[in-house]
Length: 234
Image (cartoon, rainbow, N blue to C red; front, side):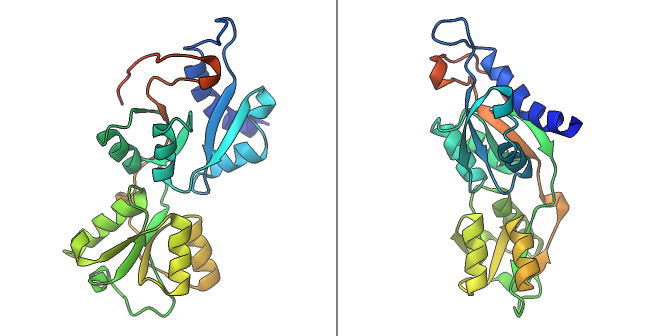
């Protein structure tokens, strides 16, 4: 029971912060309509969605699947999401590119990305990636992990052929043999290692940033007709 309350509190605390700042059209009742993402790289969101923890507290939740941090940030930018889950590097890039988001919670610092090669691959080191095809989702932690990994071998992005695929599609491409390596993300990465016998080429915790929950800066709830409530900075 305590764990259930804790999981719910993480999301509700974020929701109440925004909801309290604006009322409904009548000015008397704050909206409980929330557009929230769930993602396979965010296990917490899967638990909250599966067990209806927010709905059990009276919230009307529209759940939207985020295939990657880039999609979560896209949802926030297009006002399709009120709250989105993303990696730290993706949040930084989104802010640098002018997306008006605010980080409201830092949930964890996971070790969730690595470079993966096939079971019978002849690639034995990062240096061997030169001239190879690598699947990666640009604008996400695996992409920045790839850049830092290449740098350890004196390679630049121009030395490899980056194939921009969402995380699940990168896994499929590696399994089909369409690419030479994949800058992957759990749980897809763990799944293919366990089921296909694929190997980690490099896993470096210090290259991985924090996982965050975000909302648009000056959040507006469409159902309540609220206007911007501030311009707080990151």
